[in-house]
Image (cartoon, rainbow, N blue to C red):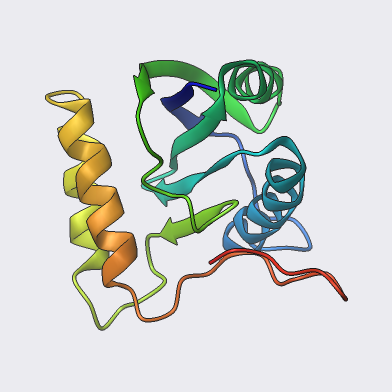
Length: 155
């Protein structure tokens, strides 16, 4: 079955409520990871400067259905499909949904790295994907979903 990699950006419509924006992003990642695991999708969500940058990998129908759901989600505005390509293998196979967020690691260069990826998206999306993969692999602890009792999740 051919694998597709979809990359999109959107403006966040999240506002602090009883949860901070960062806590809401963490909840989004947990919900996405559960759905993605069932659908056979892997990927990464980056949150930087009020923008979502997300990579979805999986079977074409599942990726398209997930992207359609995101397009209809009121937490996103200005959703832009940046890249959709067939790939031989997944870059994010170990994560049903990982996340990299600005402000997560103040002791590292992650914030600056994520801002540079945001810029790079407009110049060369495929290089931006590779950079996000590198940043994810460089993390000692990757925030993602915790396993549900009795369930093993990749990553």
